[in-house]
Length: 316
Image 1 (cartoon, rainbow, N blue to C red):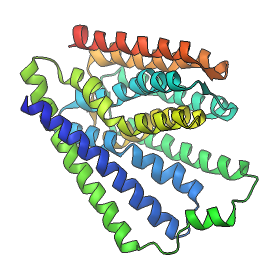
Image 2 (cartoon, rainbow, N blue to C red):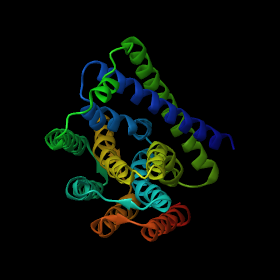
Image 3 (tube, rainbow, N blue to C red):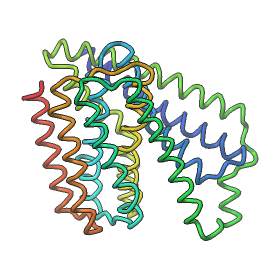
């Protein structure tokens, strides 16, 4: 099917465009003397969410609200059910106490707020401003906490690597701009072909948004978490997922709603959004035990399979 090929091409462009944007922005920021810690918590975190942002923004501006919201909801569910499930099967995931005390409660709070906002049928500009304000507060909190908690100064050699003095800023600015352009083009191709694919298959745009597109835009998180699990850096795997879910809710929904209010169908508000909330709270009892083993990972994967079947057969 031509539409499916178009969606896949769009997702590939999103993947590479996001990588170029993050790499260019990170190296440029470091060459300007900005702390790698701050870069990681802001530029990189926002950059890895750029595919979801561009897709949701493009969908909202073109009137495809179900794709805009479904992308965010589906990505958050895929992050927990699919990505953590696969990562935990590769290597058991240990949960850092700071993640349990800080990021996970924030993710749960953001999920609850988003679901409440869904219930009146629209994420308006005021809702968007509230979410963006929450994003700014979250980033500020994380930067301050990280700077306060960092007790050991980095090795001079490592500091030199993280603050390259020989970076060609013009090259990095061009890389950043190219990444942004490729992202925008990829988003347009993805949304346009996804809409046509939904029509040709006789399914709703919501189904395409919460399955195919959400998995595609979550590829950076999937790759990062699998590499982290293979390297036995399991704290990175779960931190990546939790951070991505927070940014999806606060940054993507917030920025998109500020640009253009997003209509939320009763089906999303009463179905998929509540499932997203359920997946978020499903994480809680397992992380309290501080380890996500293979048994827990299989539960997550099974839950994601059930969700996908529901989305395709019932929601579609």
